[in-house]
Image 1 (tube, rainbow, N blue to C red):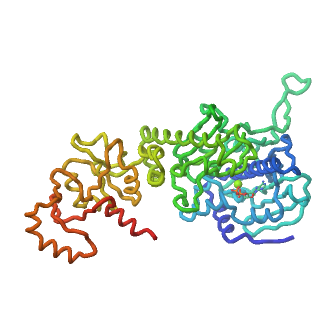
Image 2: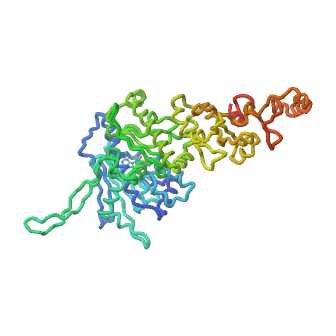
Length: 558
Ligand code: ADP
Ligand code: MG
């Protein structure tokens, strides 16, 4: 028998999880069931392309058995199983998805109370068990193996006996302590309710021995206790259910079960489309920015199911970049199961779905902006930057999708304002949408350039992010009103006659020449202006590129 240590990181993660006594421990069951379901999915998917593997629908199930005397709870599935190497790689180190995300999140928070919110994977078993035994037989190896660990002291691996491929996980449930009872995880009723809560839509039957009272043969009015196996989940995927049957909590549980994020979703969109292309989809707008969202590592995409079977975990083609924050899944009967990635890109059905989804997301965000401003502002603080990048990068029609979703700070309002709100507030004689850029709202407020515009009673949008002005430049106008920087040299307001009369120019010639030579290489020209109110001087930009944009451009690597 080999004894091995967990990797240092896994060990830390384990300790953190085991010691966090405030969280909902019940989620371990959700994690183990979803792993089993994934393992059956993988087998099903494999069977489609590999003739050596058959998939007999009836054989696929997840069994839960509680044994109070032995204090064990076991989960058995008929999925792919794991080879020895897979047992080591998957259970001996931090698994990539859920657990890694957990680790990153807890680096900033203290770990307590946030565990229940997202996927912590297989390790969560150690919240309720002081020993976990996994016996697994892979479809790729006739030899089964047993993996065992007490959670703190590494694990052992040795050959084992097992008839059919699949995995059996046995949890040795902890003894009760003074302040914690673990007995509930051996109670049939409690286990059933946990399964119902988190795993009801799992596609494969989750079976359990259930005791019921039935009429006793031949004896009127008498009942006897009968123990029989029952399927306890409804097996109808949530996306096939009727919206009216579902609660906000159902969607939140689904979001967590799927590990879409650590947060609770701000909003969801449930679609059942029965038109040129048929599909069901559940899409989520998260509340928080994922830690890697604005980095190259972030991968956008939706889960793609073909008639209930997961065929791709992150189908990027379903989401435009500017909506890359959307999480969720799409299930369509019109897609073929063994379609390849390359084929998918050209799939007409998929393109239709993508287009459709895009417009649904847009209208959902618009209605959020209109009817639930607080939620929208939260959303915008997390993902507004991505929308602005979208305006900057995308072409024609896409810009139109986005312009109504933008918000900016403004000189006259406390909160963020939309462009359409700005336009409705425009003064009668006002032709343009004015903006001023700077590092912060406070600094913009002090800009001399804003004075003249503000004096006329015009509202000014404050651009504090580097992308703001670039995005606006690409839009050029909104509702036929052009955007105008207050710092531009040709502001063209009545009083603003930057054209100097010859007389004035002559009078100041010597002074301006002197200033120009002192500032040589820093400014192109020094001119007289009537735009200033209480400040002696300001910097203006000639042409298209403003001072703020120049700063950004200069900071960019060549
Ligand atoms: P995640 O599911 O997010 O990858 P987990 O910690 O839940 O992380 O699981 C780690 C890995 O262990 C899984 O990705 C899978 O490869 C493997 N695994 C876990 N449970 C099973 C199972 N019942 N059958 C087959 N493989 C499993
Ligand atoms: Mg998992």
